[in-house]
Length: 220
Image (spheres, rainbow, N blue to C red):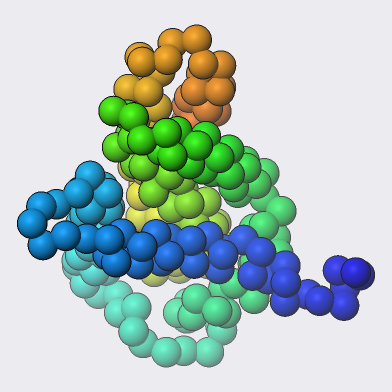
């Protein structure tokens, strides 16, 4: 198969599929939910959902205080508000090739592989394995959003990008927290040690980019 003949495959090969996996996970947990008790899976997803809702509320407040409306449609001109699809079309290919996005995507894939096998063992550590699995995809998704939005030199784009970087940092921290718990039970598992090292480097890079965005915002 010639990839050039099927460009839409590669369009759906990363962000769309990562989001689909998250949706499937929510649907699966909802289908297995009981009315008698809250499962560990539901606890993890509730933590994630509440974090997303809080992030959206805080971002809306920041935009409101700055007099910015993300709902105002405008053509792609300097100082206008670009739609998500417009940003993807404009920056998508470049962002997909960005080293930070590639690093986050590959780290997430390795996390899912380790977490899925660990969770399947159904041991006492299954909640931490599930927490790693549930949060893994959100890191590259947030990085992708931040890099796309950060390409827009306007207040809206920079605010959204900064929030996305900060959210990616939150999810990295949660993954690191669960990996640390898992490593305590399996201190000689080199996979966990390697994943934690990679997560530490990614977290530092995300914080550095967030600080750079804060500096850029002062001049917009």
